[in-house]
Image (cartoon, rainbow, N blue to C red):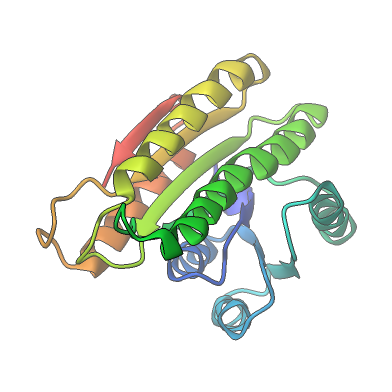
Amino acid sequence: MNITNSVVLITSAGSQLGSTLAYHFATLGATIVLCDKESSQFNDAYKLCREISSHIHKFPINDHSIESISALFEYIDQQLHRSPDVLINAITVEAMPNIFDHAASDAFTQSLALMAATLFTFGQATAERMREEKKNGVIVNVISHNDYQDLSGLDNATSMVAGFTQSLAKQLTPFNIRVGGVVPGVEKNSLHWAEIRDELIRNTEYIVSNDYFSGRVMAA
């Protein structure tokens, strides 16, 4: 895929991973649509990308309901008159709480539920529009960790991303829509977090650019 001529939709664009991915793909000449809950970080990511490109759009979204996601795609249709060529689900993993910490169980469960919702709802909505426009689209699920000193929770997230990636690829291959995943593949303290982030971004770009990559997860 020619990234320069692509529309790239990035979820959780206010996160460190999402904003860095947005900036990187903006430097490659893509038209970027940033999506996330309204926040100062989200606005900062938009301003940063606008410093290097005028082809930057942002849409605040409150939740993962059908109504909210429909509003997002209506905005994209109005602004760009085309659907995204690339969806990048940027997901930040929370550390897994102690199994005996009952106070943290609800928050951790909600975090996993949000991850599943992001993978499925954005993937479904984007794939439907890619199929309608008969375009060779790409969906990439990318995860990073909030705290690289504590990588607990990463195994759960990696398994979820691998499962979604493989399942969606099987369903979408007949429509020429590729699906890939990128996860951190390092041991504790073996690399500085900035190096891990750079590897995640490079692997994401590789999947988008490589027309033969689908149904697999790369470890950064």
